[in-house]
Length: 248
Image (cartoon, rainbow, N blue to C red; front, side, top):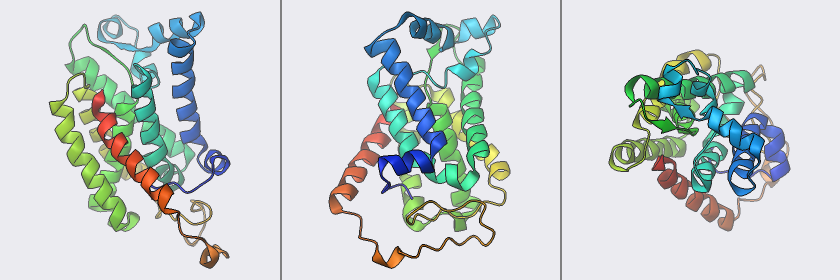
Protein backbone atom coordinates (compact mmCIF):
# COMPACT_ATOMS: atom_id res chain seq x y z
CA UNK A 1 0.00 0.00 0.00
CA UNK A 2 2.89 2.34 0.79
CA UNK A 3 5.59 0.84 -1.47
CA UNK A 4 5.32 2.31 -4.94
CA UNK A 5 5.98 0.01 -7.89
CA UNK A 6 4.63 2.24 -10.67
CA UNK A 7 6.82 3.90 -13.27
CA UNK A 8 7.13 7.68 -13.21
CA UNK A 9 4.61 8.04 -16.06
CA UNK A 10 2.19 5.67 -14.37
CA UNK A 11 2.49 7.57 -11.11
CA UNK A 12 1.62 10.86 -12.82
CA UNK A 13 -1.36 9.26 -14.56
CA UNK A 14 -2.70 7.31 -11.59
CA UNK A 15 -2.21 9.98 -8.89
CA UNK A 16 -2.58 13.42 -10.52
CA UNK A 17 -3.48 15.28 -7.31
CA UNK A 18 -0.47 14.02 -5.37
CA UNK A 19 1.74 14.68 -8.41
CA UNK A 20 0.43 18.25 -8.70
CA UNK A 21 0.95 18.99 -5.00
CA UNK A 22 4.53 17.72 -5.13
CA UNK A 23 5.17 19.77 -8.28
CA UNK A 24 3.87 22.90 -6.50
CA UNK A 25 6.23 22.26 -3.56
CA UNK A 26 9.24 21.84 -5.84
CA UNK A 27 8.45 24.77 -8.13
CA UNK A 28 7.95 27.15 -5.21
CA UNK A 29 11.21 26.01 -3.62
CA UNK A 30 13.09 26.19 -6.94
CA UNK A 31 12.09 29.77 -7.74
CA UNK A 32 12.26 31.17 -4.21
CA UNK A 33 15.56 29.62 -3.06
CA UNK A 34 17.59 27.84 -5.75
CA UNK A 35 16.86 30.21 -8.65
CA UNK A 36 15.16 33.09 -6.83
CA UNK A 37 12.82 35.12 -8.99
CA UNK A 38 11.33 38.34 -7.68
CA UNK A 39 7.73 37.33 -8.40
CA UNK A 40 8.03 34.05 -6.47
CA UNK A 41 9.95 35.67 -3.61
CA UNK A 42 7.21 38.26 -3.21
CA UNK A 43 4.66 35.46 -3.47
CA UNK A 44 6.33 33.64 -0.59
CA UNK A 45 6.48 36.79 1.53
CA UNK A 46 2.74 37.18 0.98
CA UNK A 47 1.99 33.49 1.43
CA UNK A 48 3.77 32.15 4.52
CA UNK A 49 1.88 32.09 7.78
CA UNK A 50 2.54 35.04 10.08
CA UNK A 51 0.24 35.20 13.06
CA UNK A 52 0.51 38.96 13.52
CA UNK A 53 -0.44 39.62 9.89
CA UNK A 54 -3.25 37.05 9.98
CA UNK A 55 -4.55 38.87 13.05
CA UNK A 56 -4.58 42.06 10.97
CA UNK A 57 -6.82 40.46 8.35
CA UNK A 58 -4.51 38.61 5.96
CA UNK A 59 -6.52 35.42 6.34
CA UNK A 60 -5.39 33.91 3.04
CA UNK A 61 -2.12 32.99 4.76
CA UNK A 62 -3.97 30.26 6.64
CA UNK A 63 -4.37 28.48 3.29
CA UNK A 64 -1.32 29.55 1.29
CA UNK A 65 1.11 28.62 4.07
CA UNK A 66 0.31 24.96 3.35
CA UNK A 67 2.21 25.10 0.04
CA UNK A 68 5.40 26.96 1.04
CA UNK A 69 8.37 25.43 2.88
CA UNK A 70 11.54 26.56 4.62
CA UNK A 71 14.54 25.04 2.87
CA UNK A 72 15.22 22.05 0.63
CA UNK A 73 15.00 19.30 3.27
CA UNK A 74 11.68 20.60 4.58
CA UNK A 75 10.37 20.59 1.00
CA UNK A 76 11.72 17.15 0.13
CA UNK A 77 10.58 15.35 3.27
CA UNK A 78 7.02 16.65 3.02
CA UNK A 79 6.98 15.82 -0.69
CA UNK A 80 8.29 12.31 -0.03
CA UNK A 81 5.60 11.88 2.61
CA UNK A 82 2.96 12.74 0.04
CA UNK A 83 4.45 10.32 -2.48
CA UNK A 84 4.42 7.52 0.11
CA UNK A 85 1.14 8.06 1.93
CA UNK A 86 -1.00 10.07 -0.49
CA UNK A 87 -1.60 7.77 -3.50
CA UNK A 88 -3.71 5.14 -1.74
CA UNK A 89 -5.96 7.79 -0.22
CA UNK A 90 -6.28 9.66 -3.52
CA UNK A 91 -7.60 6.49 -5.15
CA UNK A 92 -9.78 5.44 -2.22
CA UNK A 93 -11.37 8.85 -1.63
CA UNK A 94 -11.40 10.18 -5.17
CA UNK A 95 -9.72 13.39 -6.30
CA UNK A 96 -12.22 15.92 -4.88
CA UNK A 97 -12.53 14.40 -1.42
CA UNK A 98 -8.77 13.90 -1.22
CA UNK A 99 -8.13 17.58 -2.04
CA UNK A 100 -10.77 18.69 0.49
CA UNK A 101 -9.36 16.44 3.22
CA UNK A 102 -5.79 17.59 2.53
CA UNK A 103 -6.51 21.31 2.40
CA UNK A 104 -9.01 21.35 5.28
CA UNK A 105 -6.56 19.44 7.50
CA UNK A 106 -3.87 21.97 6.66
CA UNK A 107 -6.27 24.81 7.42
CA UNK A 108 -7.20 23.16 10.73
CA UNK A 109 -3.53 23.00 11.72
CA UNK A 110 -2.88 26.60 10.67
CA UNK A 111 -5.97 27.92 12.45
CA UNK A 112 -4.78 26.27 15.65
CA UNK A 113 -1.34 27.81 15.08
CA UNK A 114 -2.95 31.24 14.77
CA UNK A 115 -5.23 30.91 17.79
CA UNK A 116 -2.73 29.19 20.09
CA UNK A 117 0.66 30.34 18.82
CA UNK A 118 2.57 33.50 19.65
CA UNK A 119 1.89 36.66 17.64
CA UNK A 120 5.45 36.70 16.28
CA UNK A 121 5.28 33.10 15.02
CA UNK A 122 6.03 32.55 11.33
CA UNK A 123 5.17 29.16 9.89
CA UNK A 124 4.85 27.29 6.60
CA UNK A 125 4.71 23.76 5.28
CA UNK A 126 2.40 20.89 4.42
CA UNK A 127 2.96 19.04 7.70
CA UNK A 128 -0.50 19.84 9.06
CA UNK A 129 -2.14 18.60 5.87
CA UNK A 130 0.00 15.45 5.83
CA UNK A 131 -0.83 14.76 9.46
CA UNK A 132 -4.44 15.08 8.38
CA UNK A 133 -3.86 12.16 6.02
CA UNK A 134 -2.40 10.22 8.92
CA UNK A 135 -5.53 11.12 10.89
CA UNK A 136 -7.69 9.51 8.20
CA UNK A 137 -5.51 6.40 8.32
CA UNK A 138 -5.80 6.40 12.12
CA UNK A 139 -9.59 6.51 11.86
CA UNK A 140 -9.51 3.60 9.41
CA UNK A 141 -7.22 1.67 11.73
CA UNK A 142 -9.76 2.01 14.57
CA UNK A 143 -13.17 2.08 12.88
CA UNK A 144 -12.64 0.82 9.31
CA UNK A 145 -10.17 -2.00 9.77
CA UNK A 146 -11.29 -3.74 6.59
CA UNK A 147 -9.79 -0.89 4.55
CA UNK A 148 -6.21 -1.54 5.71
CA UNK A 149 -3.94 -4.55 5.44
CA UNK A 150 -1.85 -5.70 8.39
CA UNK A 151 1.47 -4.28 7.14
CA UNK A 152 -0.04 -0.87 6.49
CA UNK A 153 -1.59 -0.82 9.95
CA UNK A 154 1.80 -1.50 11.52
CA UNK A 155 3.44 1.29 9.51
CA UNK A 156 0.74 3.72 10.61
CA UNK A 157 1.28 2.76 14.25
CA UNK A 158 5.00 3.45 13.92
CA UNK A 159 4.31 6.83 12.27
CA UNK A 160 1.95 7.93 15.01
CA UNK A 161 4.21 6.81 17.84
CA UNK A 162 7.24 8.53 16.30
CA UNK A 163 5.12 11.55 15.48
CA UNK A 164 3.93 12.06 19.02
CA UNK A 165 7.43 11.56 20.44
CA UNK A 166 9.27 13.78 17.95
CA UNK A 167 6.60 16.49 17.87
CA UNK A 168 7.22 17.26 21.52
CA UNK A 169 10.95 16.53 21.73
CA UNK A 170 12.46 18.25 18.69
CA UNK A 171 12.96 21.98 18.29
CA UNK A 172 11.47 24.13 15.51
CA UNK A 173 8.35 22.00 15.20
CA UNK A 174 4.92 23.54 14.78
CA UNK A 175 3.22 21.44 17.44
CA UNK A 176 -0.16 23.04 16.81
CA UNK A 177 -0.13 22.22 13.09
CA UNK A 178 0.84 18.60 13.72
CA UNK A 179 -1.64 17.86 16.48
CA UNK A 180 -4.60 19.76 15.08
CA UNK A 181 -3.87 18.64 11.52
CA UNK A 182 -4.08 15.07 12.82
CA UNK A 183 -7.30 15.79 14.71
CA UNK A 184 -8.76 17.49 11.64
CA UNK A 185 -8.07 14.36 9.59
CA UNK A 186 -9.74 12.17 12.21
CA UNK A 187 -12.74 14.51 12.26
CA UNK A 188 -13.05 14.57 8.47
CA UNK A 189 -12.59 10.82 8.06
CA UNK A 190 -16.22 9.76 8.69
CA UNK A 191 -17.33 12.12 5.92
CA UNK A 192 -14.71 11.41 3.27
CA UNK A 193 -14.64 7.65 3.89
CA UNK A 194 -18.29 7.09 3.10
CA UNK A 195 -18.71 4.34 0.47
CA UNK A 196 -14.93 3.85 0.36
CA UNK A 197 -13.45 0.46 -0.51
CA UNK A 198 -9.98 -0.98 0.05
CA UNK A 199 -7.07 0.04 -2.11
CA UNK A 200 -5.99 -2.76 -4.46
CA UNK A 201 -2.45 -2.40 -5.75
CA UNK A 202 -2.24 -4.58 -8.85
CA UNK A 203 -1.13 -3.49 -12.30
CA UNK A 204 -3.22 -0.35 -11.95
CA UNK A 205 -4.88 1.33 -8.96
CA UNK A 206 -8.23 0.18 -7.69
CA UNK A 207 -11.14 1.70 -9.62
CA UNK A 208 -12.91 3.80 -6.99
CA UNK A 209 -16.14 3.79 -8.98
CA UNK A 210 -16.18 0.11 -9.91
CA UNK A 211 -19.59 -1.19 -8.87
CA UNK A 212 -18.57 -4.55 -7.42
CA UNK A 213 -15.37 -3.40 -5.71
CA UNK A 214 -13.17 -6.00 -7.39
CA UNK A 215 -10.62 -5.15 -10.02
CA UNK A 216 -9.53 -8.05 -12.23
CA UNK A 217 -6.03 -8.02 -13.59
CA UNK A 218 -5.64 -10.73 -16.26
CA UNK A 219 -1.83 -10.63 -15.98
CA UNK A 220 -1.67 -10.81 -12.19
CA UNK A 221 -0.21 -14.35 -12.18
CA UNK A 222 2.61 -13.35 -14.52
CA UNK A 223 3.76 -10.44 -12.43
CA UNK A 224 7.34 -10.45 -11.32
CA UNK A 225 8.03 -9.91 -7.67
CA UNK A 226 9.13 -6.44 -6.68
CA UNK A 227 12.96 -6.39 -6.96
CA UNK A 228 14.70 -6.52 -3.59
CA UNK A 229 16.65 -3.37 -4.47
CA UNK A 230 13.39 -1.49 -4.86
CA UNK A 231 12.11 -2.84 -1.55
CA UNK A 232 15.30 -1.69 0.19
CA UNK A 233 15.10 1.71 -1.50
CA UNK A 234 11.51 2.33 -0.41
CA UNK A 235 12.19 0.92 3.05
CA UNK A 236 15.07 3.34 3.58
CA UNK A 237 12.98 6.17 2.14
CA UNK A 238 10.13 5.46 4.55
CA UNK A 239 12.55 5.52 7.49
CA UNK A 240 14.03 8.85 6.31
CA UNK A 241 10.58 10.31 5.87
CA UNK A 242 9.50 9.18 9.32
CA UNK A 243 12.53 10.93 10.77
CA UNK A 244 12.38 13.98 8.51
CA UNK A 245 8.72 14.99 8.50
CA UNK A 246 8.94 15.82 12.18
CA UNK A 247 11.60 18.49 11.67
CA UNK A 248 9.09 21.33 11.34
